[in-house]
Length: 191
Image 1 (tube, rainbow, N blue to C red):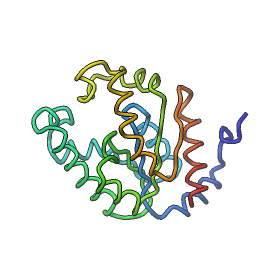
Image 2: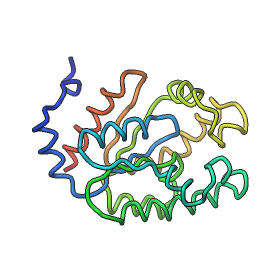
Image 3: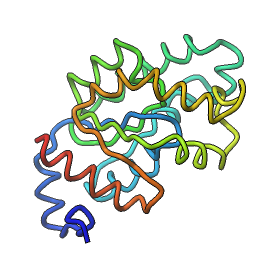
Image 4: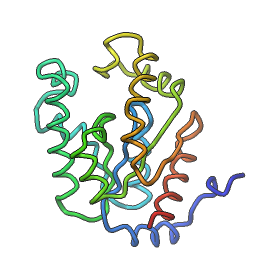
């Protein structure tokens, strides 16, 4: 068993949580597990979880695919930037925020996240991304052709932006608990 697979005690988690004084922002490709890992992380650290896409949809009173269809990707990215800025700034302190896959590629959004949050890049191989994104049909960027080709291209295009995150965690096909343990270890080392 890997040391990262060893569960942390409640007291270890509480001690780590006390050291966290800013939001934890999860970045990475669609399907990498930002929301599912983020919810579990927030539960372990006893703090709120916020999905930026849900907040964007609430603000626009439209779904992300509807916003993409009506206004295009640049409009979505601008709204995303404003919502993420608000989420980071309001209430300050410890919370977990899952971002949309392209959010961190916006230079202004990325600078804000890097300056004011603990930034974790969740990364997966293309096969894992294809398998996970095929479970739901709500990804506007995957409707424009072969999902595998699109995911491979986006992953490479976005790698330079994602690689600026100080914490990089590989998320494979194994249980999310393994990814979660790596995220906790990365945060602990970053602090």
